Image 1 (cartoon, rainbow, N blue to C red):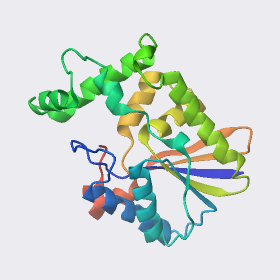
Image 2 (cartoon, rainbow, N blue to C red):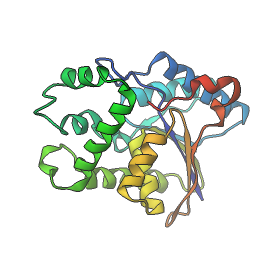
Image 3 (tube, one colour):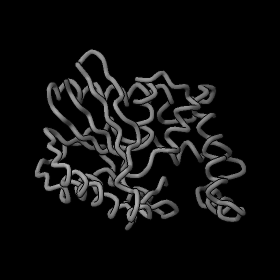
Length: 230
């Protein structure tokens, strides 16, 4: 049996010019996760990560705190979909630039709620398949890429425990495929995945089974201030 531990990256820099960097909280979350692994004496045989900066920063910070000396292997199949492109394609007439969109969101009474509503509509547009020509990667292509990445890891992890640092979209799509979730339920799961949360999958090489989704007990009690979603 192979055991795959999927980790969503720490909090990134939402609202900044470059989202693909951990925030100060994101680094603390990553260390907290690594300390959890150290306290549990977790032993990993392989470490994988997407090619994005937030994946690398989460992996390096977590592994250092865990006392793990393995070098992460980059697998671009675990990269997140282009969420900014998906969001910007929702209404290019009303929001011609990223700045215009962010200003419009910030001007509302509840910016986070507004963002969630807009992103939900943007995801539906992407998922419906009617506008595939607008996107560099279609929804089915993203689903296929994510599952192919998981299968790659499983093929190289027979009898081993591998940890993968990735993103919420990838993790939710993998869970979708294994549990038969609808696209809407998958979006809702993605929105609910916490930063540095843990999802585990077991595989015998033929069948993959979800063992847990979105574990985050390491952000309870005195660490509850580290519980973030975006």
